Length: 212
Image (cartoon, rainbow, N blue to C red; front, top):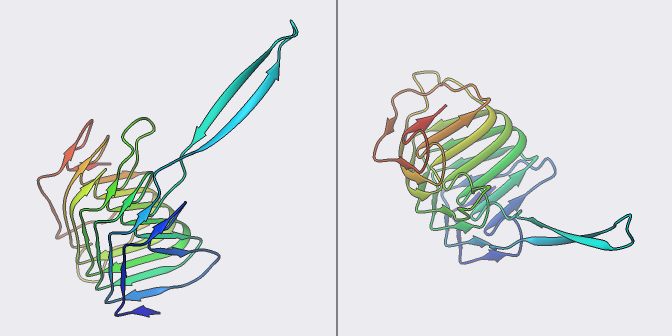
């Protein structure tokens, strides 16, 4: 449990500027402020040399961007976040505030994601300025607000957002996106959303509010 903590001004050379969780951990983050953290903006460069039949050679270069989770990075971890403010975090790839993948459960309650940014806007564009969620079995978002995040508020792929006992997901979303889904983008996912507000979102391509 991480409780009543300030996690601010940290930087990682790769993933998880503020917090990094892997390997089936089950962290609970409560009543914390996670702000102004950064997962470095950069890339790895791989060079390959191929010999041609004529006897010459050709060199190719591959750039790989893989810095995710400016505020929080979680992979193969069951994550619970309650009553937290996650703000002004940046990443060069996906998940300015939070990047979560390959887990059985993600639970977020009464959290504010504000002015986080995933800033790479050249193809392939960064996803999820507020939250980027990929390949998670089930998730619940209760009373969360996403405001002023760059590269979209919520980006989800292959995930189920489960119904809540009394209604829906109860979220407020106001953000801008590089490509699709300024407020929310969902691909190959099952969603149940009610009592929520999507307003003043923008997308460079399709789905200013929602892209489903």
